[in-house]
Length: 79
Image (cartoon, rainbow, N blue to C red; front, side):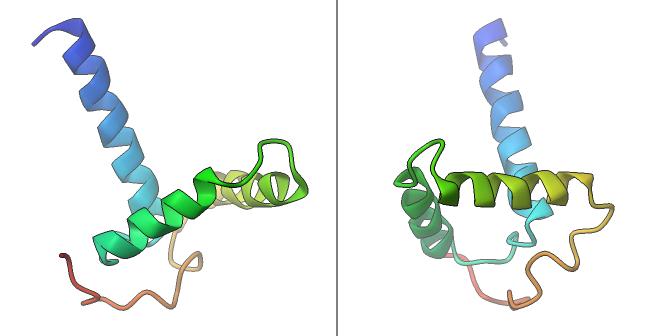
């Protein structure tokens, strides 16, 4: 495995961990992609960007993901 492929694999692993940390590992993939597309539209440095970043910083510091997204159902399904 080349160094570039190892870097890419590590990046994907870390991004997957963020999905799990957010409590979205059982969420529908289309829902996740739609949410990420909406997030990509948030202007960096805007009040909304800062608000969401603050939430993320607090979540990284939290010891448990259980309280982050309690409304995601266990069997939301993968498409």
